[in-house]
Length: 203
Image 1: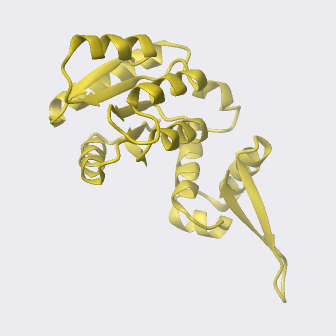
Image 2: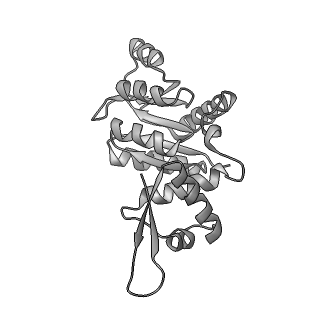
Image 3: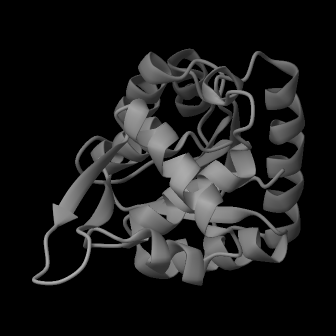
């Protein structure tokens, strides 16, 4: 089963560095540049772990941690900060953070921290298990949702199937599943000839 990390930092170069580290460890990545965007992605994508910068716009790390805990009580949240003060660490722990990584980030340290927190997270009642039903694999579901997330326009099944190593019928079944859960909306396009085409967008 694949692992998805949500990286939250307003600095694009830092996000790139963190993404490279996670990719090296064979983890998938989704990104947010603000706290509000991060909470929205948390609800849409249900990642396995969050790397959250302390100083970000539109809700700082503290506010974002508290908002994330309202929607997900189990996901590990690692705070990225240059602030070594104990009172800051204590405040984040009280808000719901699970660990800290000091900047500048060192790849071996971060990878080991992520692996440890992922193991701890799996020992809890992980919320992602609640929405994955029989015949729906979390890895395949996340691949399709991540693809839709990267697209600005609504997408056809053919486009998804061509981009991912997933059969047409499987993509169709997973999209129907997501539509039933209210996570995907369908746009029907009627051409001059042939059958109408459905395009799908992540809500």
